[in-house]
Image 1 (cartoon, rainbow, N blue to C red):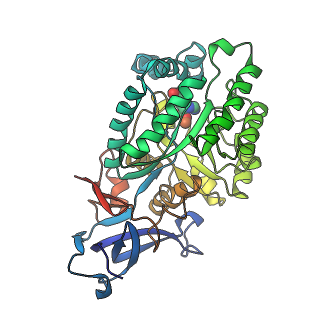
Image 2 (tube, rainbow, N blue to C red):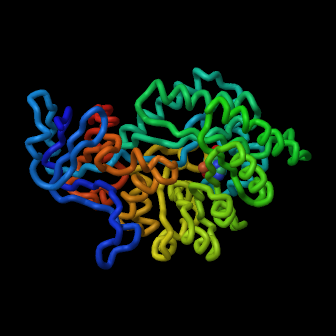
Image 3 (cartoon, protein in one colour):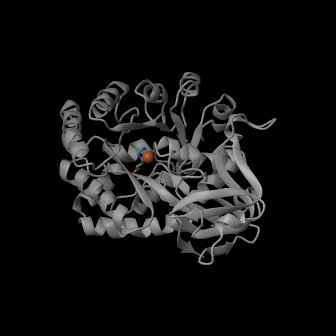
Length: 416
Ligand code: NIG
Ligand code: FE
């Protein structure tokens, strides 16, 4: 079959295709294919050929666009599977308190933190939210990110939650990064409900049928944390969401261990996220499940907290993804490459593990691994050409973006 587009002279082609068994001495998370010296052929936005060596002549016609990768690294489009993209305002007014050690949950209790972003988001127009989110998405694309997950949760009332989800829907049509939408109505308890937790939880549950019917979200998420929503409260909402045919993910064991990872596994969540305070039992539960451990080391970095025990989890056989957690409070950055660099330096994750985490495992955590997350025949031609000769270099030279070109569905969408 003829190709519309061929990328040739690729130095390292990280396909992220999973090998049945890892190479000798490698972890279960290092079982991805990397082709040394290869090509990629695309037609109609999909991959029709991929392999080692020179491009087979059957792919080339006189109209085929040829791109010389100049011996550099090519990977699948990166996937950021945990963001709080849609919100108004920023929280630099809390920054000094934060760096002087005032705890995150204490700022929240005083009506700051998430609740302050809720106020600004309630007051913002849809247009304002779209404008701000687009600015962030453009940055993300520049870091090589072609798909993200985006949560509501800065509304906490019907209208604002729906407004955030409508923004997700609009963004999917109005710019290049693909958005997977999550309803996170239970992100914090609004002050008005301080003495009526049950009432708030019922109000979140009451929104589920409408959100499903209007196809405003694919996933449902809860901030399951001591002082936010308990295990029992979270379980109740998660099971209702499941009844309404939403897929599940969960903010689990971020600050204090209350068994969030086990709950995520119990309800069949696609991911358990954060896990800085995960227990031995939590690790065991994840290991024997399909739930992906979605680690967000930028949040530990920014809150000056413990890092999730990634090395231990991976060595025990847990499958890990990595995301930014981009939000105005605990992690105000869109830079997934920085997160990957922190994962190397602080989580001691190895280069192949890191690339697996932000490609095929992130795709699995979003239930999208049939279409994206690896470069294989029949999958979407979302890929990145990096200005680096090997993947180690991308992690080693930190704090910058190594992206050279980004392609989404075979189209060039970013060029340095
Ligand atoms: O994932 N943990 C809860 N939610 C976000 C923080 C949101 C905020 O501080 O605005 C997180 O870290
Ligand atoms: Fe989060």
